[in-house]
Length: 299
Image 1 (cartoon, one colour):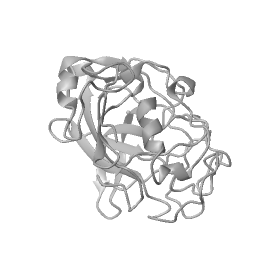
Image 2: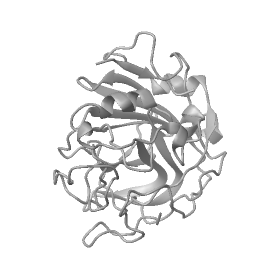
Image 3: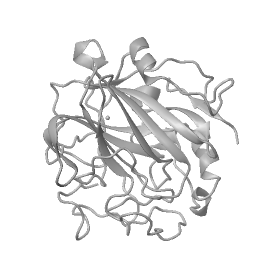
Image 4: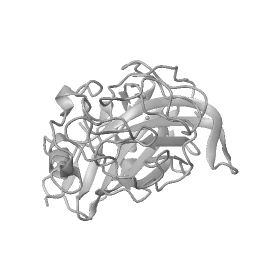
């Protein structure tokens, strides 16, 4: 399969950003080295884009976006969120920087991510149909926690998650959700991040060409239907890295590495909201019985 280097042109019991655009509160940096359309002139599975280098080269303000209907409180503190779910291996490497301090690395920031599985199902909401024709949710992993996690950035502002390439659900383009917090603590009894303030709510995206190739492979191809491309997504507005477009290298067989630099204003506090397009049959508010505490925002 073709290797990719797609170059792009973010608590706990507190705040969830609403509205598609606030502006001026987050940034992402990149160094443009690839051809248009997200394919490099000569990428390979050993290529590892440097988010740190990108952060030093460019600071681009990005929009705040909706958290969507599937956020759940009390994500586990961990870097491997896979829980045995099938799909192409994905390493998500994020560099968080302080936009108010010359884009200096932001250490000890809590970064939370969550996304659907290869067939479009979210943990905590496994009865919500992803649209198209999809097999039933496979029952692998904890139905309330898979593909969700939160971890702290290191002294260089970097945090890395191990997961799988997300699948799709209608009417959204393939994406990963993200929140960034500071000021909280880890509850060792529950292994969750408590307190703190949310400074950024964002979503990360993949190039259409990469999504098309991944979705043609197992297990993704078992979910048939019309996949929403970036141009038709209700959140992505065509601004590349400013909208969270990831830099990706690798292949479905060797696994992918996706990177981006996320800048936050530590003085900004995200406000409550919701939206973002839910799959058919999605819940409108409360999570299922027995799910982690606190309701996700409604769609």
